[in-house]
Image (cartoon, rainbow, N blue to C red; front, side, top):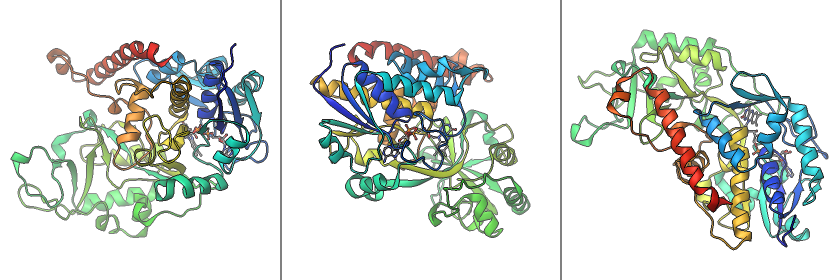
Length: 454
Ligand SMILES: Cc1cc2nc3c(=O)[nH]c(=O)nc-3n(C[C@H](O)[C@H](O)[C@H](O)COP(=O)(O)OP(=O)(O)OC[C@H]3O[C@@H](n4cnc5c(N)ncnc54)[C@H](O)[C@@H]3O)c2cc1C
């Protein structure tokens, strides 16, 4: 294979770094891949090989009409090492791709170590720019993940991120609008009078009377919580407290916090005892975020407790709430669309650091950045993946979201698809049809850009 003069430093051989290094090396680019694991393991890591799946061993759904199925289709087209090796070490898991994590990680390491264009350096990187200069690399990808080591985190804070580099992530649940009973809720923005000429309000409110509120608070307190990992101190930002922790502080605390009813009088002027607000997660209103409902409740209990709310009896969740340590940037403010730093255009970020969440999402961000660097090396402009594709939708999300909140892939990030009258009438199948249509459109669009990407 012809090798090129350009050299790329990749920091971190996790999901994103491994896929980025593999993509570029296969194009004939020299890659220096730096990984700290042989020196010291991170707090969530157990093995010293690459691409470690630190929690579940699942790379999620293979169903072509799911968000993760869509990403896998695009990863395959881009020659993903993670996906290819995942299939080679798959274990039975229904329609999901689960892997034998040790064999998977060992195989990814072996392939990268044996690649003629990749030099592995087992070292902790503190200053990626200096390290790149020392090794003659002209482009850099920082893919050091959600638990980036302290000295590198400090360097990023000092040189790039400042207050826009975050270390903690508190996620509120997001619910599928189609699964809610709207008749038990009402639209109203806080302190805004009802005025039909303004159109639909942005917030949907769930009113609770005293008895229902007290019962709900009791459920929150008694529900099972995820215990903090040993590397996560039980220390939360006051502005972002889990709702269950608020409930533990006192029965009325949530009612004076995110569940306050002030300014949310119903159309007849009456004010509920407490209110839960739902905010549209996307322009379509196909998903709603439970405002201020970041929570430590274990998933089964979270679903059970939330389904006790009026209108939530059959709620289906796009993702559930959680609170965990996470390092990620405000991409919209600090990065360009090709995920290069505005401050240092030759330095790019990939993986979870960019504000996506999840193994496959992180790996695709590695492939995306590698594509963009490959174009730069060839004197081409960066290329915007259309928002109709899975990768394009993820990049568009992190580059446009008003409050950075790491997200998994989901169809709410893609533009809406039109349903025919007949399809709209099939209430039960509507969601499935929408996904199948969005997924078919994504594949078609991806096909048209393949030549441009390569
Ligand atoms: C505790 C925890 C559990 C998670 N569980 C799941 C889950 O179950 N499912 C899911 O889909 N997602 C999960 N995630 C989310 C996340 O998407 C994955 O962690 C994913 O691995 C992120 O990919 P990445 O490539 O960005 O980072 P990583 O895969 O973490 O890779 C980063 C690599 O960089 C290395 N590194 C760090 N600092 C340095 C440095 N200074 N110099 C050199 N190397 C460095 C690390 O050792 C690591 O190998 C979890 C995250 C955390 C923190």
